Image 1 (cartoon, rainbow, N blue to C red):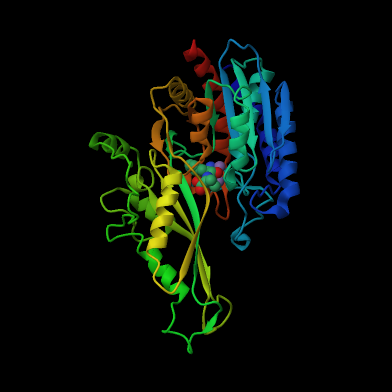
Image 2 (image 1 turned 60 degrees about the vertical axis):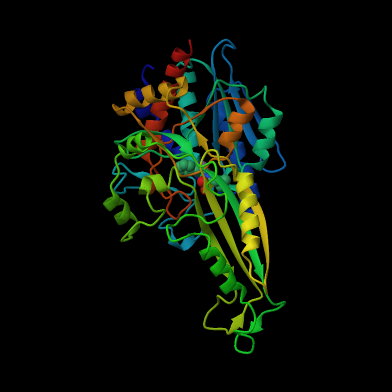
Amino acid sequence: MNNIKNYISEHKDRFLNELIELLKIPSVSADSAFEKDVRKTADQVKLSLEKAGCDLVEMCETDGYPIVYGEKIIDPALPTILVYGHYDVQPADPIELWTSGPFEPVIKKTDKHPEGAIFARGACDDKGQMYMHVKALEFMTSTNQLPCNVKFMIEGEEEVGSVNLGVFVKNNQEKLKNDVILISDTGMIANDIPSITTGLRGLSYVEVEVTGPNRDLHSGLYGGAVANPINVLTKMIASLHDEKNQITIPGFYDGVEDLSREERDEMAKAPFSLENYKKALDIDAVYGEEGYTTNERNAIRPTLDVNGIWGGYTGEGAKTVIASKAYAKISMRLVPNQDWESITELFTKHFLSIAPAGVTVKVTPHHGGQGYVTPTNSIGYKAASMAYNETFGKKPIPQRSGGSIPIVALFEEELKSKTILMGFGLDSDAIHSPNEHFGVFNYLKGIETIPLFYKYFTELSK
Ligand code: BES
Ligand code: MN
Ligand code: MN
């Protein structure tokens, strides 16, 4: 690709400003109070694809938020890359912990980003990473160097489970036909240690409700004589892990692949400092399943975590009360071969079976999705590896991630193509947390690397 470095340095300020404008719109998909803003963001994305050179851009309405579809087909005989990303973001709260407004983007320097990082909700997940693809397309079309066909599919419901995208994909197989899917919605090891994500975990998310007496009771008059739903719920939850920190749900580990010693040794070669890891989180020890390293615990092993728990009195001061109900939200991260719907069933059956007399228990499944692994010997992986090698001056390390993008497994099932996960975020970028940010270096490096993927993928496809 000629002149990509020059093009980027010439247009750098505009690239940053355009992203900043996009980040100012609070496209929180989980909260209906932001509906107008979510739709406004979709309009903005549509406009940006038109400007970047797509021949056709459509706003595809769904039962929820629209999917922005764009394409530029230069020759049906050439390969087609399908780019996926999302324009919705996580809620910003707790807002008081942000050092600047979540929707007032500013560039600040950090330890990991001495050249500066854009602070805003969605900066890294995923507006910043999605927009790298728009700017990469702009570069290729405006310099006449687009080597193949491209399709864009940018959705607004990723953070709430991509339910309507699943339907859209099933109903639009022909329109979405492609040779490879390209996504930047994950991370890499460090700015000087490039890596390509080769795996994502699956997910099963459930909510549980424990009901005891028909009303809140005086904890003196009734305490000790009836089941306290909060005591019961916490005891039930505690029993879901054994002393080795393994999950006790019968059948939970059926199908979980045991990686060979060789594969584990290979994984362990990725640079990692336990000391720095603990320091970054202000913890004195890591915690997890016996017999596995930290990297293994959050990449190749399934987990069960309470994400929220509530019930009873949580206001100021003390109120002596036995609550009638207690609740928790629980997520299970899954590995490939664990079917999320079967896991949800196993959880439900087990959780109901451990309820003591005196309470009733309800389990409500939320969303979920399958895990994913992609081989490192595919044309797509090789093309990505060559692209990183050129822009970072180093061969990228394949790495399985602990996060989930449930729709990726569905893409493979429905569209029969593999996804390449070219993520440019860092774990320290605080996605889903207060003070989310995305390095200016990472943003520009992404814009530089993506066109090379197009080039090498087209060449290797011949
Ligand atoms: N982009 C993230 C997933 C991610 C981040 C994967 C970093 C790997 C590395 C995505 O937006 C996300 O947050 N996914 C959710 C699941 C979804 C169903 C809400 C997740 O992983 O919790
Ligand atoms: Mn994301
Ligand atoms: Mn996310």
